[in-house]
Length: 209
Image (cartoon, rainbow, N blue to C red; front, side, top):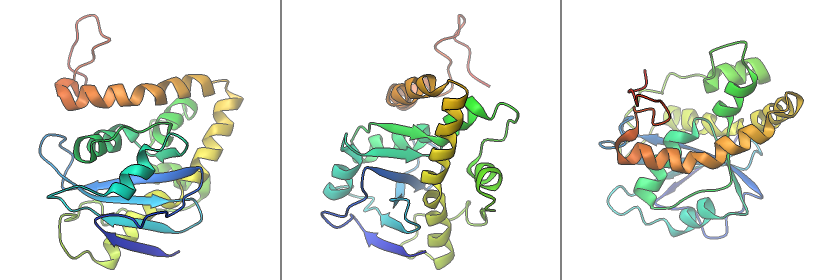
């Protein structure tokens, strides 16, 4: 595995092919309070590219071009948060999208464990370390352990997408999954505008548990 680190943006013309695995690291999990710190990328070749964002400007024209390119599929795990934070700070919309967490929820109905660590352990027999999950991602200087952890969140998403797609086809739920993926930008817009914890599809519009 090679981890390539950039400050502010990726180089112009960096090629990820027709699909790119994407993840983010932030100061916390609040869409109102916490800033985007890192964007991690992989083409599925076993290598990762990590961009440390300029949290004052968020310019990154090459990264924005890549992520907003409609010809490149963006693969996430729990896309709902990443899409929202990228839209808020980078100001871009993304499509097409594949979310391994949504796909897992549609086909791994024998469990309620749909975290990335659970998926990679069951489907790939890889035990991801989450030791650096709670970490200071806003630090100017990141440790090698932090970079390795951030990279691990994108290295296996292509493999997981392939396995989960096969299961979605087997269960005849691929069209349903695609409809969910297409709805994600609207769901993220609701999150950003204050409906994060409200189920607007409920008759009583109760806050979701």
